[in-house]
Length: 357
Image (cartoon, rainbow, N blue to C red; front, top):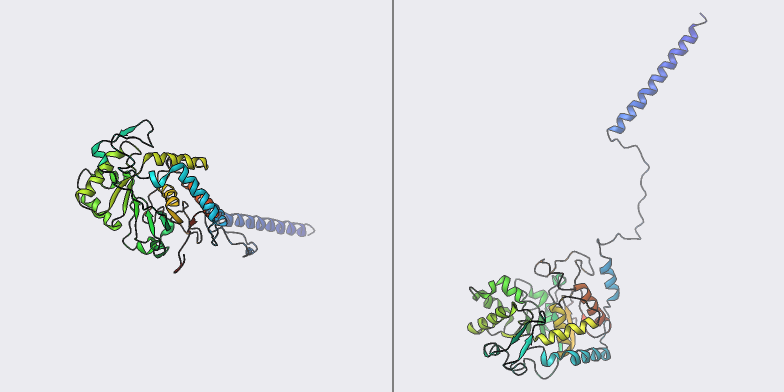
């Protein structure tokens, strides 16, 4: 009788041990089935610090901090920079080859191939402008229009068209609704020979599509770097012949390679290291000699909008990337931004407002 309580106590202990073991096994199984343990609720983050607007936008934000909407022209800085351009590059007289500044027998040294030369013969001479294409005066306002994606949906067309002289780069499209944002007035447009080679078959076959594409530019000047590289010369001459044969009103002219060489030296002294200057900075340089007030549109080398930070295409009309090994677009932009800050020229970033100047 005395042993029974001890035996009962022993049975109770066994039951408690088995129960504890089952509890542990059950908890382990629940954890294996990815059942999350109960945790205290997370505290909400403070709303005083907004999240980063986009990945990699720090550079864009830094640029906007340097960019001032309350821009004011600084006449002394403008005159000093323009005088430097005129003295070292002579753009007004030498940017474009004419029959006056490049007679038959002249030797042209290619700016992209220093060892290659072209001796002007009568056939080549006949394609040169017969007279100086620019009047003996400066325009009051000039717009240099780049092709950056920042122009898409910008509503800058009316402001661009209000300039006295409008320069465009590399045969950009103006139809299909683009005119509202980029305008359609054109006084000078550049054409990279690579476009003639790739888009128009080097003008070796049917040439009418090329001529019809030029109608959007009216009777503007068509500026071609025919003597930058040897392979550019034949297709550039064919472009001039095609325009003459089809009696197009557009006026083909050629860059003087000496001017492009001088310009590269000037910008190198300003700190720009690039294999080739872009069409945008070349035309901005020329505009600073020809115009009292230079406005730039579509110059933005970043992939996000400077204000809303939404993603941008490379061009306002496509997302084809440029050959980065040739141009140093961010470095060029930084130099132009510096000139903007100094009141030499005005960069327009973002959308345009009605009546804005």
